[in-house]
Image 1 (spheres, rainbow, N blue to C red):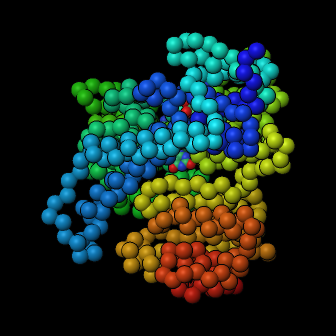
Image 2: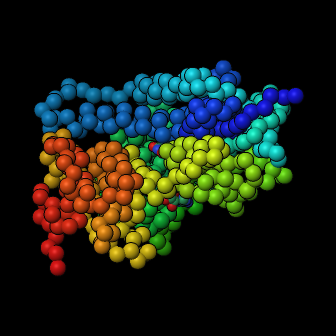
Image 3: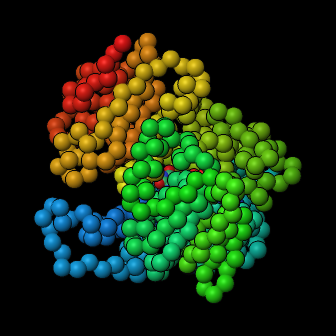
Length: 478
Ligand code: FAD
Ligand code: AMP
């Protein structure tokens, strides 16, 4: 009889590998099937996040920001550089090294915890069982008590701009440029478009962002989105809203893009074009017809709040299911699924998942936006503190942006926090913890914050909600 597993995890991205490690920690005999192959033909672990997503994009964002600083931010500190030059090959080499270090780290963690990695494409069969097809087309079947599907997502394509991986690229191709394009077009002014557009803008590219929607970052709080648009425009990102791309033509080593904006049809020519119009779940060829796992019309695997699919003992987590496509959301779901397999009452608090855009300054958010609270008729109050009034931000010569905190008008309970500003990603985490504990703005107000820190902006924004901020003039209360 073939070997029996307690758990087969399909996919080794942040949803799958975290689930596999927790399962092994809790004593489940666990195997993780991954179809992405490394250079040696073994399972390449880490998924989108480590290989072509969060980590390489942040490596390039950090490198490109240092280059930008060397050109434009150091003189004010009295630092005079004789010259500054960008070596794109070295920048890409460093990125690859970071990726290798982290993916190798997962292989080490699998070994340390006793998770078996298996190279091959997994398919859920009834039972549940998992069919695995190797690159050499050898097929085997894994017998298991439970399955967690963590197959992730892939970049979405649009018919007018087919990716050719030379002139028209998706996010993966945009992380691989070996030279700075003189003129770069970006279709989609969302998270990925802004991050990758910023990388190449800082390196010297002229960047035009074509966004179909009329509003900039509509999922962000209105005040933060408006401030961010101003800042990015000042940085030289040419953001064109209401611009729907209808056609692209590659000729003479360039790509011509036709787009509609308002009544008119417009044309731009770029050296490279990034298609960053979102991602879709990778659920094709993943499910046998009789496995009992359902999908919606967009390809997301159907799950309940606990990531249970329609089939017994089969769970699905991460980008392949509903909810924000964020690494940490998938990881938490992976842990919840494992703990529920073991009969624990685990759950994910979907109300407090932070989201971040790693531009400079960063944009970070948790909870409801002002426009959502208004639409839901929730009576609320708000406080805003600009980084221009933060001693620490001024000392660092980085005083752009603001912190906005939203709270229930009666109880003062925090409902949301929205930041555009230096280290926003780390700052918002304080409010994530506060919300997790059901804190009020008063709780934050009476908490002692070290001085001088960027965190004081959180303190002041919380105080500002009730007109008690010290370092800005409070709005007069009626
Ligand atoms: P994935 O990471 O996509 O992993 C799925 C894995 O499953 C892959 O390795 C795939 O090969 C494997 N697989 C698929 N089908 C099969 C099969 N049938 N058999 C075996 N293996 C299979 N998120 C953040 O939170 N923060 C960020 O800063 C951030 N930056 C990003 C930047 C970019 C450029 C991109 C593209 C994404 C970014 N994301 C970010 C999103 C983040 O990468 C995803 O939300 C996250 O990787 C999803 O994790 P996952 O485990 O669900 O899927
Ligand atoms: P995100 O989902 O955050 O990655 O953002 C993707 C963005 O791409 C969204 O803001 C979409 O409105 C935008 N988008 C989608 N299709 C087009 C198109 N044809 N032209 C321009 N923008 C588009």
